[in-house]
Length: 116
Length: 114
Image (tube, rainbow over the protein chains, first blue to last red):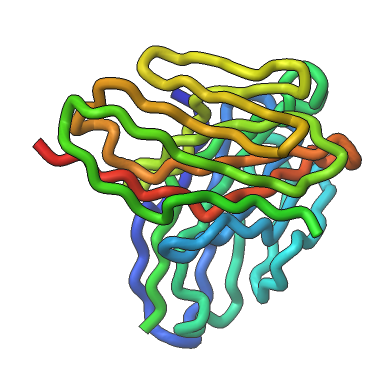
């Protein structure tokens, strides 16, 4: 079982609210990722980080922002939630040496977000 | 364009039966292919990984195959159990980036009935 945690697991919130989804890992991984997944659809990369103070946008445009102040922590923030943000958000991490790990990413349990 | 296609989209089988899931990909340059199992409401968990030189890999009742020439992979599940009910996702990694980018299929939703 991977040591990567996400909170909350479920969140129902009204339009316009600011939310932060938490993600933390205890494996000492430098690389961390946020994915968005809708039912029956593939995971889409929305943010990633190579390490502390490094954040990049992924393939799927997202109005969310991320920060990486500590190695183990990679929170995602939505300043003003909208119904279009309703989705499952998955956090993942991987080792720095991709040759060692063959790019394996370890996933958290996800946060199911519903914006009313 | 790098893509991963899976079939069937969904599958229902009876407990104890075998099944095979398919994956076709166009990812290049190819690094490795993984099959992940994703239980409802959970994150994906890796089942098997295969690199270019490997054409079969087993993990208990799960056996994955890879044909790098035709860019096809399959996941065979033997003697299915109720706990096998999940989405099975084919994930291909390229070796062209330092990020270790992953390309995900949409998954095959497997339901095992008693």
